[in-house]
Amino acid sequence: MFLASASPAAFRRSAHLNALRSLDRFLDQSLSPQKATSVSQDEQAYTLSFDVPGIAKDQLTIGIEGSIVRIETKADAPRQYKVAYELPLDIDTATSEAKLEHGVLTLKLGKKVPVSNVSTLSIN
Image 1 (cartoon, one colour):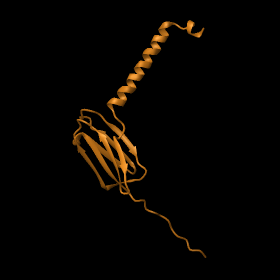
Image 2 (image 1 turned 180 degrees about the vertical axis):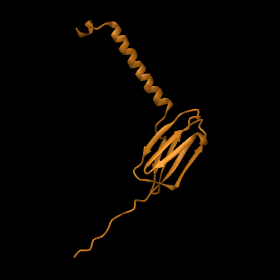
Image 3 (image 1 turned 45 degrees about the vertical axis):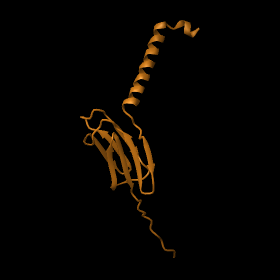
Image 4 (image 1 turned 90 degrees about the horizontal axis):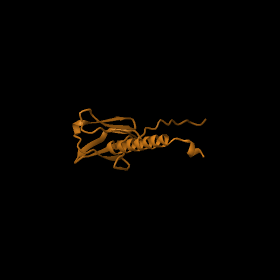
């Protein structure tokens, strides 16, 4: 009964809106990849790799603040990327490096060893 009372135009409009939303999601995912292509770690560092075809090293900026890494392209880049990752430990920028070869950006991010602020108390 409910379907009989609704107008056919309302169904078409709804179908078009759903199709447009799906197209928007598809374009967002395909034109701006937000995931690292590989992530690994060892005791000293995290290693992240990203596919950034057609981007030159002078068109990228990499910002590190504590445990957060931000990667984005500058305005003059042919493609726009903007991604941020929060890692479990702070990053040591002195032991970190970035390399761009054949359209793949590889970050080797040194782990900052946490400093213990534990004090000992003597027992009386």
